[in-house]
Amino acid sequence: MAKKSNQQTNTSGRKIISRNRRAHHDYILEKSYDAGLVLMGSEIKSIRDNKVNLADGFVQERGGELWLMNAHIAPYEKANVWGHTDPRRPRKLLLHKREISQIITQIRERSYTAVPTTLYLERGLAKIEIAIARGKKTYDKRESIAKRDAERDIQRALKSR
Image 1 (cartoon, rainbow, N blue to C red):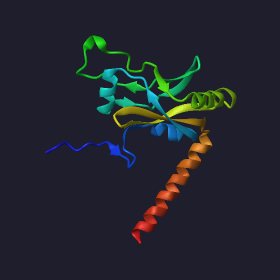
Image 2 (cartoon, one colour):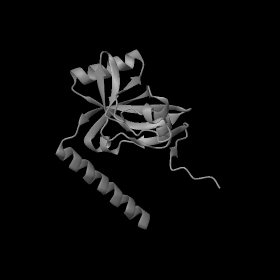
Image 3 (cartoon, helix red, strand yellow):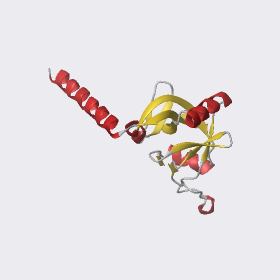
Image 4 (cartoon, rainbow, N blue to C red):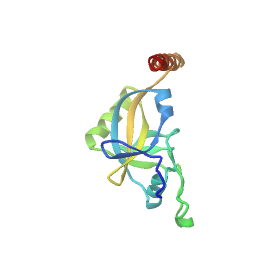
């Protein structure tokens, strides 16, 4: 009998590998972009094994390009021992020139930040969804938690009817 996968698949053919729940808690997400990633062969195998953590990741601009920083992709166990790279190494993001310039202007001029929200596979290629975001203040976090609790209570009340 085949092993059941714990990965979610959307109707669009995306297999979601990892979500950054911390980004939804710490930031107000405004606009999102889908980007490709420049990876090594062993890294894509680790991604397929769900050995990814986006919680501390962020996007940084270097020389007119966007780089994914501090996202942890564990080394693939079956790969060559000498070929292991730093799990938190910077990875280049692949976007259209227009999208890169939009993101860079919002980061520079409007003091926004770009954070990774979702890592997924689409037609065998690893893609990442990044969002332009503003940092939440403490009272914003409390407000969103209270709103979520209220919605949960409403759903419970409707369910128990």
